[in-house]
Amino acid sequence: MIQVAQIIFILSVLVILHEFGHYIAAKIFKVRVEKFYLFMDAGFSLIKKKIGETEWGIGWLPIGGYVKLSGMIDESMDTEQMKQPAQPWEFRSKPAWQRLIIMLGGIFVNIVLAITIYTIMFSTVGQKYIATDVVQKNGLSFSQVGKDVGFKNGDKIVSVDGELVQNKFNRLIIDVLLSDKLIVNRDGQNKEITLSDEDKAKILGAEGKNFMASRIEGFKIDSILPKSGAFNAGLKVNDQIISVDNKEFKYFDEFSELISNKPNDSIALKVQRENQIVNLKAKLDKNSKLGFLPGLSLTTNKEKFEVVNKLSFSSALPQAMKESWELLVYNVKQFKLILKPKTQAYKQVKSPIGIARMLPDEWNWEFIWSFTALFSIGLAFMNLLPIPGLDGGHALFTIVEMITGKTLNEKTAGYVQTFGMIILLSLMALTFGKDIYQLVMDKFFANH
Image (cartoon, rainbow, N blue to C red; front, side, top):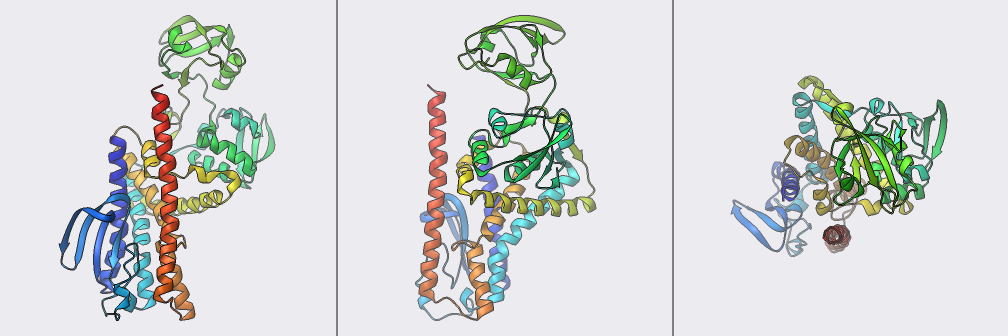
């Protein structure tokens, strides 16, 4: 429920402020706003109240929101009004440049919101990121999929498409998935790795961003699966395995190699537990696994990798603007990846249900506001897309009108809007359906 509450809160903030951008621009140019809705009210609304000329309400379908402007064909698909003569307070009676500003008002507010949040966060809790140079100190560790596409444990990424690696590791992971050519340092020598679209599909279909991690020396056990070999052997959380069958190792990937290809075998473990050494016997399962999760994630070891820069307000503002711009650029890059069918990146697109499942189980204001800023830039980018039904589609037709001096007739505009809404609703149905199916299957396997 905490995850659901978080996604509802984040969506509510984003939708209300996005639509307020349209609302305030419309009011500036004296366009009548008939409705202002959080979420969609298809058929009926949960709450509604008319104040002045505007009906304010909350819809039952949590897939966005809208403001209904007089004299405009929008999500409400109300074409009856368009059959009447244009009135001075209507959207269609305003100059094209004013209509363009109204259409872009929501996007503008989304970008301003992200900059504002980042400015406040950078000047209070600080600008935080995972440092690439620290993560790569001992090289990187790769999953089997990572090894299959050309990486090797211990590799250090030097450059991506000719650009030296960023100091923010989370961005580096995305850069790798979006790259054409990588240079890695392997055993003191530079080596080129080229990832094909098929390679990227393998990575995204398996671990995604988790396909590479820091090669941490001396890992500890983070969690133990019930009824597993680790559980039966008596291993505990925070235990540090030192050797397997009297063979010592430094890194987790070396540990994995020592127990690989030993299905159902018994092994001898030497374990560091607080201030004592414990010897245990453990049995591997049919997949040569012990049944525990190592504390290798960046979250688990955040204190080792995280850099915190506490900035003054004057320094935080330009950094916040830079951060927002970089996020917008990354949205463009990721969209290009999605448009390549061979990468199968389109399968990773998530609905609010899928996003909610990624959120933490505890209410964390710092995370929530950081995620809201990130999501706000994503919403701005999505609405910039020239798809009928989105702000970018309306803006595109208005720009064409400003250039050519010609306006779409009302009948054609209605068809275009309908076509756009069909596309958007179809995409929403697919993403919601995929995430609901995944949720049901995960629950099923968890109980069987």
